[in-house]
Structures are given as structure tokens and as C-alpha cells.
Image (tube, rainbow, N blue to C red):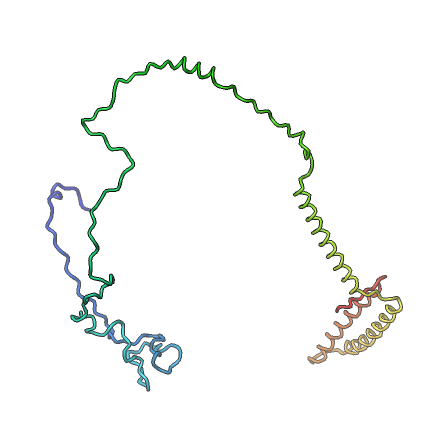
Length: 267
């Protein structure tokens, strides 16, 4: 840390820092881009190219450089052309004649002129008007204020009645509710039509058929359960299938034991 000293007040001579050497890349300036699609612009190779980062690409029927592709114009094209200068009557104005000279005039100002230094304002003006008497005379001669009678809103014809616009809005809301209610009722009727109430004879006939089906599946299942060791995939799968069918049949028979049995005709 630099300590405080009186010698620090003396300005020191500026020594410019040494100039760093120009940066030179270790790679050649014509290196082909790595993992880029630019290399395939003039070739028939698909997708990206030069993933390994090789300095030189394998030569093929087409080169990766175009004939006139470069970053900017070729060398020497930035030099000025001595023949390209503005010719006569080629400007944007279309004519070489200057506009007519007009005298300049200041715009007229609406403000009053600033008084000069030798112009003094009027001083010492006095008025002989008696403001007390004048005020009293003006009040005596002025017309009295007219008292505006307040309207009694309770005596109006439509006082206490519901406005017409509220009645219209209420009627439109009631109509919408009625339409929605009718839609719900029609949908409920359609759902009721889709249901079919089975008679007791049909229920008994269906139940008898399910029981016969259950007995046949159960007989097949009992023949598998007596096997001591189920060591094949087919027997194991057959046993599982019988168990699923028995459970499903028992569930269906339990549903048919209800007092009313409906059938959905849409399924």
C-alpha cells in the first residue's frame, strides 16, 4: 500500500506502456470450418461436414469453396473510380437552378413590446370612488334572488314502480332459464328412452343362462385345480382366465337380483 508523502504532489513523467505484439493465430487462415454446413454448399454431401476438424478436406468431384464466394468484395474493388462523379443535371433536385432569394421578415408577435429603459410607469394615481356607498347602492338596486322550489320526487307518476328496462331484462333472463330447463328435460327424456326395463321372465331367463355358463366354467376350473403342480404357461393362463370369467359371472348374477333391471340400448 502506498503511504502518504509530500513527494507524491510532484507530477511524475508519463512513461507509455510497451506495445504488445500483434496476435498471430497458430492455425492457418484458410482453415475449413469444423462441423459446419457451409462446406456442403457446392458439394453433394448431406448435413454437416468436417467433424474431426481436419485442416484440409478430402478432395472430391466438387470443392467446398465457390468460385466467387468470399467475405466481402475482392481486393482492389474498394478503390474509388475516377469516372464515377456527379454529372450535370443528374442531381436529385432535377434542375441546377437555385431558388429565388426572398427577404427575411420576423414573424409578428402578439405580445406587447418591452418598455424601454427611459420609459417610466405611471405613479401616484388615486381614485375618489367610495366603495362602501357603491356597494350599498348596488345591493339595493339588484334584483332579489329567485327561490327555486325543490321538486317532490315522491309525487311522480312512476315513483316506486320498476323501470321498463329492468322488466325487459328480467323477462329475457326468465326466457333463457325456461329454454335451459326445457333442454335439460329433453335430455333427461332422451336418456330415459335409452333405458329398457326388463320383465321378470326375461330376467329369470338371463339369470338361468348365466348360471349354466358359470357351472360350465366352474367345471373346467375344478379340473385344473386338482392338478398338483401347474408347471406350464398354458395351464397357468387357463386357470387365470377361468378365475376372471367366474368373478365376472358372479358379479352379473348379483346385478340381476335387483328388483328393477334396466338395459342401456345405446351400448
